[in-house]
Image (tube, rainbow, N blue to C red; front, side):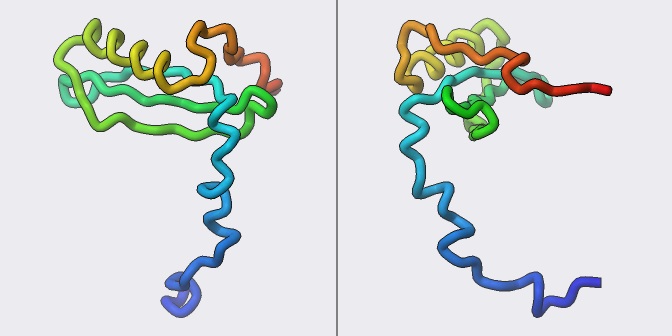
Length: 102
């Protein structure tokens, strides 16, 4: 059983270092995922670094939409404006992760 003395502590600078090292977001591949929750459509943006695809950052958008088509339009707008490569030539492929399902 965990004691409150060990679980309730103040973190150090190294615990939040990933928030300070955000220059990799300039070269990130941005993809979106649209899902339905309680009858409304929501968007998740995934940022992955083009040099190391295992460096991921997921952001849930606070907006929700009544129709899937409206959510797709806004998701495409979010994706195009948030990534450095406006034309979309940087892509993320599932084979880049080299996952073995055995």
